[in-house]
Length: 117
Length: 115
Image (cartoon, rainbow over all chains, first blue to last red; front, side, top):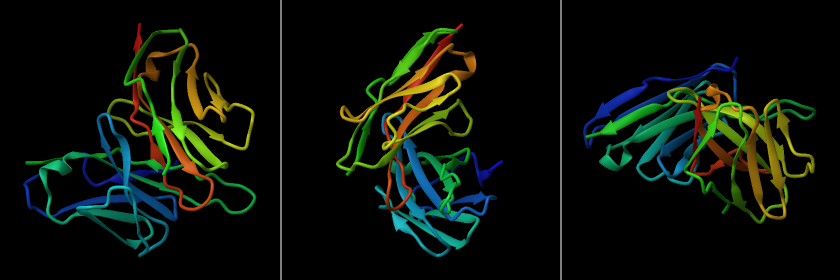
């Protein structure tokens, strides 16, 4: 089974702190994603990466950055946390199917509920 | 840009009954994928069902089936013989056929199963 793990289930930080959210997948997936989940808004894409050291902005990248130094690990960084970044953060990974088959299903981690005071 | 709308924030159904969750989307693309994801309370999001837009046949996975109406841009999820374990947030999602694999999600529908 694909396993996507996130470093913390719950995190409480203070305004202005630098925050690191870590995500690790064990299926050698090329693609990794960071989403933010808020009530009434669903999930919104922050950043994604389709290869090591590659990154692309999603729909709401402001206030965030990412790092992908190894294929299995994708980090989300809040340079200076603010109260409006209090949210649930979900990481996901997927592979790009080769010609002839394979699944590109996104597999999600359990989420990190971040509270910024 | 594509958008996905789920107009039912909450739904409830009696155990063993059938329930339909609605989803509409907006796109100018002709080829794309549509998904329903399930997020049980305090548990990880999992894929329920997937539909390729170029396939006319509606996807089915056991008790879960979709009604895909491409012209109307509608993609509803039907859950038959509802079970207590079906209680969850359900998200409809869209993905372009070409390019990056990023998903566009709807707002979600919280489904409650009444015993």
